[in-house]
Length: 523
Image (cartoon, rainbow, N blue to C red; front, top):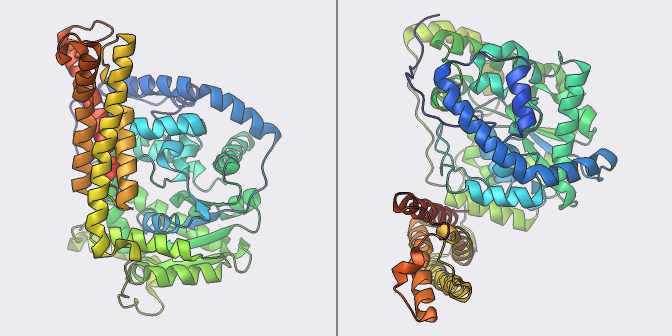
């Protein structure tokens, strides 16, 4: 192998992608087979196991109860809509757009990262993760958060280790073990049963409380699983295949690995040559499997779209896709899609360097068949004008923002007063933990009134959430009739100052960032 793409003498202790998987899944990862993990990556394993222990305890009651329920009863549900297309082909944009439809339901990241949970633990983890997950994905700056639409393959990884994700971004040396979970053709009977049970169980859990909705799934590996998905969900399963110029797909995939590998790897990285070889082989085999299996899809159950056409006329292309798949498209869905598109109108994708002459000579012939296949047909549509939703009329935008900011301040004051009164009544100091729920409520309520979040609204909500601690202490001091308000900031468990100050800062961060992220969300 040639020189690695990057070197990490002491990698930062970022947790692996399955850090919220239960401990029994970690045991499967560490023993079947045992990966070769260098000592310098052990801190990442330690952080992952610590978070896994916490998630295991939080989700265990619901995991046992709902798991037992699904083993004896499966609810009736409509067959899902499944988005197909290789990584970096536009699948996320299409999923985010279709997820605006109230009739469809995608798993969210808090559900995909801890799929063993259910309503209570998913809700708790949604807000627990909110301050710690970046607002944008590192590989492409796309909006990201615990309650954003997720790839269901992460759930299969974190619930059953039935995914190729471990060898893609964690332990590349075990490609032969995990790569088989892409097209599923070479799995043993037990492995296939493990995949199929958990894939169906995830959809059933999502729809237990939403029986009238249809699941919307998106994972690029589904592109090579058509026959298995039809066998699992039935012939009424709808598929949407999205494509993009293969050269752009390839370059974007290289950038994807360059962005994620330093964060998630538990092994030294692959060389550039080996990485490109794997991407090319996987891309070609995935789309070849799709072409080989597309005849298994019943008539009227497959629609196709090119990313440039979707970007040029998103609503027009969505309406066409719905017509071809015989899906109802409500006015409410169109309006929510407009809201999303208007909020994201300034987004610009990453720009990747062009190929050198040597790279062109090596890669263009290998991708020629896909280039001809995906770039044939009518020219890309001209950019269609997008009418803004009435709810975003500039005449109402500023008043709504002011009302949302005012509500953030009022709710923070109300929460702090109630908090301080309770502390005075029980004669207990003001533990900064309560900045967190106040921040969540303040952020959600302010954005609800403002309709769309903004940095200004987020700043107001974040400052209000952090200020609630001081106001609560002042309220407790006033109501108790004795002592300074600073006395009510004493830690109830008697931590020394050198630990108590970081404790306050931590909960200020959690509360303030929870308010900020919910109040800045644009759709």
